[in-house]
Image (tube, rainbow, N blue to C red; front, side):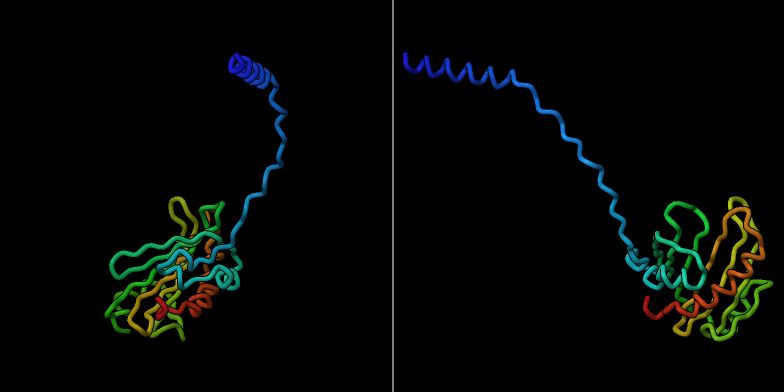
Length: 183
């Protein structure tokens, strides 16, 4: 009998507890997203040769996203700003056995201007806008350790060729900071 009374008391307490209303939810303020300033080098590959602050110092453009890829003896890195597709900067580094004569004859694009004090031989050039993007500025060179290197800046649609010409000059300065032996 005593057990039945205890069991009945527990049942009353359980039923009474279930009938209680849930407390009002507490509003918690939304947390601000955490923004991390991750260096380009963290993407590995050829991105180890680039630094967002150095790019900004030479070009005036701030990038914050980098991606790298490698295929055989060719390593690439593309950097962009997170919220826009263009402009973008692409760095390509390929091992080569070509010499200065071969570079001048086979690699130097038509209409390119030679650049001094950039590797064993270097050039700068610009190209007209094409479908989907604006003009392009490019600097290429034959590095001392047998690597063919290019920096290619693609401007957004609507940019003019004069902007690419000006940028090509600034890319030469950036190119001189790329430490290709570090790859």
